[in-house]
Amino acid sequence: MAYLEHILYLDYNSTTPIDSRVLDAILPFLKDNFANPSSTHHFGQSINEKVKQAREQIANFINAEPNELIFTSGATEAINIAIKGVSESYSNKGKHIITVSTEHKAVLDTSKDLERKGFEVTYLPVQPTGLINLTELQKAIRPDTVLVSVMYVNNETGVIQPIKEISKLAHEKGALFMTDATQAVGKIEIDVVDLGIDLLCFSGHKMYAPKGIGVLYLRNKTKLTPQMHGGGHEQGLRSGTLNVPGIIALAKACEIASEEMALNQRNISALRDKLETELLKLPNTALNGDSENKIYNTTNICFKGQDANVLIGRMKNIAVSNGSACSSAVVEPSHVLKAMGLSDDEAFASLRFSLGKYNSIEDIETVISKIKELTQPNFKYA
Ligand SMILES: *Cc1c(COP(=O)(O)O)cnc(C)c1O
Image 1 (spheres, rainbow, N blue to C red):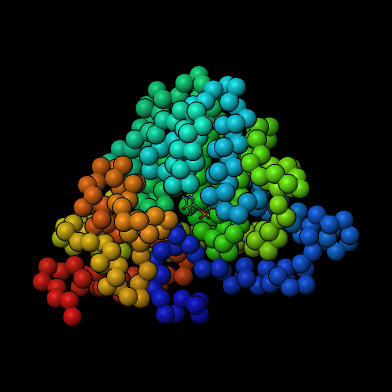
Image 2 (cartoon, rainbow, N blue to C red):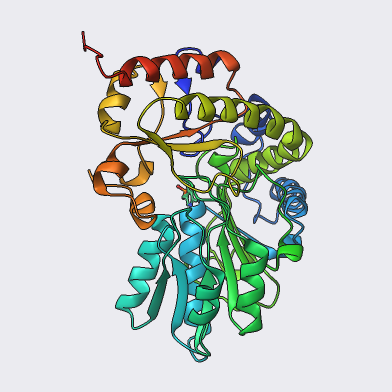
């Protein structure tokens, strides 16, 4: 990858570079194939046909029907449309929703907004591993609970929640189940039918497609009050001219992911395991999050006594993260690590390494030796 030559990138959970095959696939749609797929002329209809094919491909990728997908600008928009739309349309059943304290801010802040509008929200705590307690979830679901929303893979720790069990508990008590699967789609196989998912959100730029395209999967017959009004696109559920290049890109990214997922998993997990094992050999280190139920590209490590921001500043050409990128303008400890029981100091001392398909063993060796150098007790800054 030419554009990754000067940077050692271990921050794939915040965004990924665009796969060059994805870029090739979309260029015609940024040039000659620019027509609006809603236009009735031949030009528009030929683009509409391409969008239709892309929609089928993306739907197949998660075992959904094409008419169950709503294209959005990203996961944040999909999450907003989903939580607000479902709460509104089922408010005659009840005004209670359940989510988890370690969710992405897109879910937490949308839930906070609902609280201001008279809904009640239960924020389930997590165990020190980052996993929720299923018995606690079961107890929290009430007759007036309309939605249970639990993320699939945590963006900071990589912890994977038991989605199938959770959806079963929600359905047993008549609630809908939603999952923010932004860190899962493209990395592991997702079958919305098998997992019993009613609503699922994800984003193109976390899986080698560009920024500005996302998906809300909405299981057939799930009612959703539109939050975006206008020309009636996407079955009236999300008005606005379709992002054709984004949709084409996402379809290509899904095609590539389905062909190469097993290979990526093998390669990336070997690199991640090496990185994790070597870093945990250093004194005063600890792994954040469950070591078993975890996505293969992520590790989150606490370097006790260190300041993650200082470490990041000293690793000039190495990109890693100290928490979620979204709140990094504000200096607060990660809400995810805090919810897992870490102190402020421990959270501030933690780094997230998230790997991707363009990483090499040399990258990993460089990072290991750099971190060793920076964290040794008698290290003197030049
Ligand atoms: C990145 C991310 C989001 C937000 O996605 P956008 O594309 O920025 O809207 C939501 N949830 C998770 C888990 C993420 O990793």
